[in-house]
Length: 403
Image 1 (tube, rainbow, N blue to C red):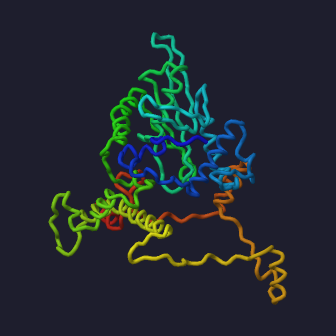
Image 2 (image 1 turned 90 degrees about the horizontal axis):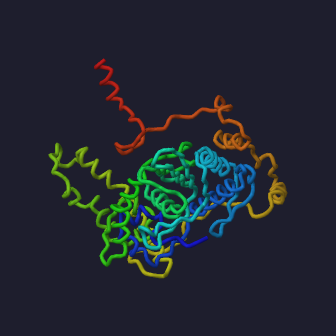
Image 3 (image 1 turned 180 degrees about the horizontal axis):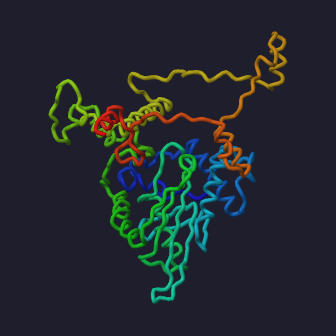
């Protein structure tokens, strides 16, 4: 697999929002996590299925090696990857490119990346304008921790720029052509997130946003800007002074200096307005705290001293039988423990059974009368969240009085 570009599409959110992160991360190894390696395995399965035109279930119980680790192709991976495959196959486009390397050096030096899936639909016309196009850039996200959205998604848009440059010699792309950016994250949502812009709008974004940020990453004094999105996966966040400064504002007395003064009802009690300001800073503060702790751990592991701290043995793992199950059972019988006392049968969860049904080409709906599911409890979200607001008991009572 080819090396990632210094200013890669996948890290674009980071270097566009915080150009200084590039120089600060220099020299720090980009070690793959278990989740990232699993994502690579899922991508390999998806591309294999699309190229061979075979369903994911054909590879059930096989193994895929990624980043030195082996991952079993189980029912969960088959189900999630098949959802992605089905969507890709449903997208119209006479020209299909799977796991294709694209270049965007017209905008960024050494810019290149590998797009998961590209479909170009050509519309014939008898008008003087000739052909028009719709460029579909589809990106598979196998993670289940953070939901990604297609709206102005820099990674997808950079891949689209790569399509314009790489395939521009074959297609007469125009400013009025449509670019459809798609993020498919099957472990979080069944439906993909999609965002359409024109080629002209994409080129405008590249000129006004991406290119200036790319140029600034190579300057002597690039700017640093903290934020949950760009800091989450930054390898330098554990020792970044900008992140430290902005995170400390959450707990520092001068945190409110940048806001309008509040009139306190009780000088010893935070107002709801103040609570809102502090809550807005908590996600970034958590990112920083976790990063500093991880960096400190790495320093201690390498033998460096951190005053007041040392490494000790943590909580031991769960006890596991050492040896073959049958041999263990035979030994236990010698101590008067019967097989029935230690072996239990437990039916799989409805979610696991649904995945088995999907693998068998059956709809999970057939078992919906066999299970129940409690409603999700109230949880805090930003006001911009697309989910419906839950009414408090007081709000409901007030409405009842009004009616």
